[in-house]
Amino acid sequence: MDFSPFYQELFSSLNRGLLMSVALIVPSAIGGVLIGITAGCLRAYGNRAVRLLGNGYAAVFRGTPLVVQLFVLYFGLPNLGIYFSPYAAAVTGFILCSGAYQSEYIRGALLSIKRGQYAGAHALGLTHFQTIFWIIIPQAVRRAIHGCGNEIIYLIKYSSLAYIVTCLELTGEGKTVATEYFRFTEVFIIIGLYYLALVTCASFLLKIIEKRLYIPGFGHK
Amino acid sequence: MTSNTPILKAQAIQKSFDGNTILNGVDVVLEKGEIIVLIGPSGGGKSTLLQCINCLVIPDDGQIELEQQPIDFSNKQDLYRLRQQVGMIFQEFNLFDHLTALDNITIALRKVKKLDRNTAEKRARLELEQVGLGEKGDLYPAQLSGGQKQRVAIARALAMDPKILLLDEPTSALDPDLIGEVISVIKNLAAKGMTMIMATHQISLISTLADHILFMENGQIVESGTPKELLAKGNVNKTQGFCDRLNELATGEQ
Image 1 (tube, each protein chain N blue to C red):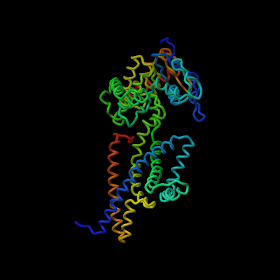
Image 2 (image 1 turned 60 degrees about the horizontal axis):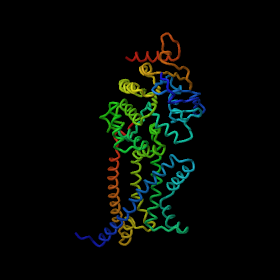
Image 3 (image 1 turned 30 degrees about the horizontal axis):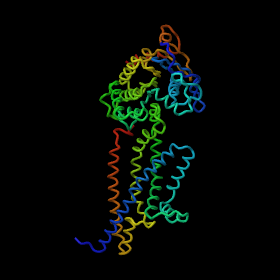
Image 4 (image 1 turned 180 degrees about the vertical axis):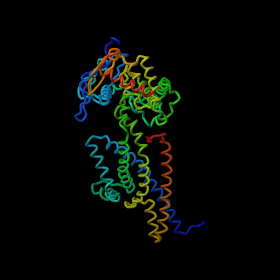
């Protein structure tokens, strides 16, 4: 079956964009979770100054549009002599934004762990750090996982904003073709299907992770 | 009673929360192999006293000595060392929900005692067998009954080779038909010479195990003595009255 030149160009562009999207999403998702755990712990356990810092971070990155954050990173920071490539700017923006949301899920999960878990660990002679690292975080992650997964799915979709800083991923590549041929409806429907496929894959992976972390009866008390 | 030098000495322990005095100058002296039972009405300070003894709650004032070594409350290493040597059993078990019964025991052996996984697991299996749960090592807390959870908690504390075991109402959160299995484990410990301080309302533990009874009320020890002294026929005191009421409850249930 031969595709028309339009479709040939569209699919080769979209496949290129898909690779870029995946290259944006995977490190951003992992980085976001790691920053989220770190910031969540600092916000839940830190002293006043650290908590203030963590809360400020979350407030800024949850409180401003991602578009604005990306603009500042890519177009604003060069004024201070800091230059990011489009890809680096996008990934940095996504990690910081996603991390702020993840930290909220993690913080909530940490605060929901009962005092008895700390008492049990402290009574055995575990240090406070060991208690948090070996007892509290593993439980909090299991409580937070559904929220964190949800945030990763959001991330997949807001990764489309990378084209704003000229990092051409799925949406950016598609938009170029659509403009060239002036066929917006079909191009964007197809882009939508690509995202749907990405999200489906991610949901599938998240299910596997949830299964691996599953503990009989955990959280049903 | 033995005539050794005391293994644990808590003196003039003071603790208040938000201006409410919970402990008002409590002294406890424990000798090796001795079993002290704390009784008294709820809110009398029994739990807080136990938690102060292993510094889960830091006393506002007073002194704690373990084997003649005073504990510096402001020194974290001191507190960690104290807690490693003083096991604690909670009313609510406090098993780690995300770990199997076996890993509940191995985690402290590996992280605190720095044993390798194999050695830790061997020790943990041994302790589980001691409390009659040799087959249950791979189950998670949610899959165990209350009595089984408490036995795992006891095995977990014993695996650390504590010099003293503190038990905070170990049977109070259990269904009546599950209390027996925990009591028999505790009686076994007593028979092996474990040094213990136990807060309990369980009349069978009070009368059969106690070397010494402390009656606590309003943050103070108001009566203290051997069961013989306090529970002798014809005695009129708070301990006697309290135990009589527990007895009535116990017989009323049957």
